[in-house]
Length: 102
Image (cartoon, rainbow, N blue to C red; front, side):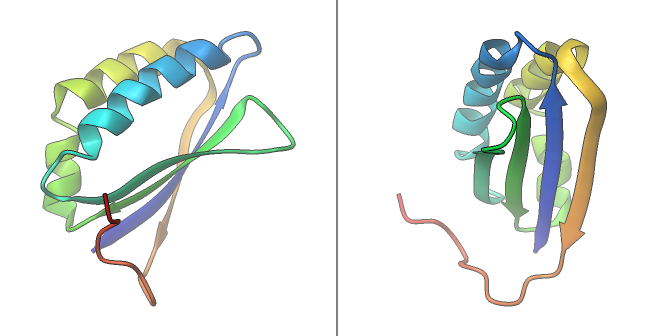
């Protein structure tokens, strides 16, 4: 199981573009067979600071995710508006729900 938290901060005035890109990414990713969880979170202290909580079955599932059209479209849309790129923190599962119920 692979768990990561991705931090993405976007430029002022680009929040809606970011959300549009991530709606595409979330909708597509949640249908991938190797995805367990994919949530976009917002920092309540900063409307331009987001976190993506991701759980994939394996490194191979994450690699497959990075090859999808929805992921590539999202990255293409957000790269020009992010500040400082994307930072990632990886976690080891302890008490993790295997798959979110629909």
